[in-house]
Image 1 (cartoon, helix red, strand yellow):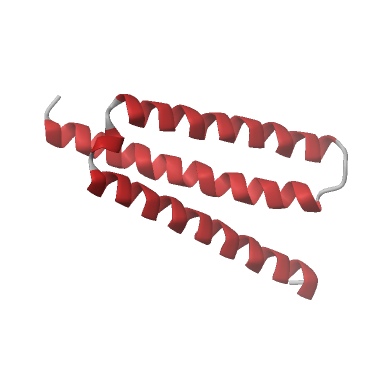
Image 2 (cartoon, rainbow, N blue to C red; image 1 turned 45 degrees about the vertical axis):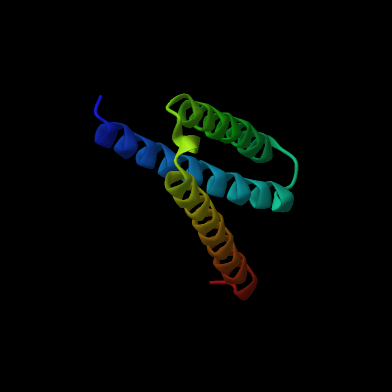
Length: 102
């Protein structure tokens, strides 16, 4: 595969990883607010699967040597931070809607 093709795949993998990491934060906050029962058990299972997905993506990125390019690594970090901030802000809005009764 061409270097450009590999870089594009790495970009997509980094974006997917950032999404998974952001979802981990959302699931953690949902678990913290959910009483015990089958719904919470389902969220906990989803959290384990999401963490596994994030780990597998990170491994694949390393296999494709995504960490050797400082620019690509910086983009990956920025995407992860952005995804986490987005997930956190989305959760904050959801909580405000619950408390306000919307």
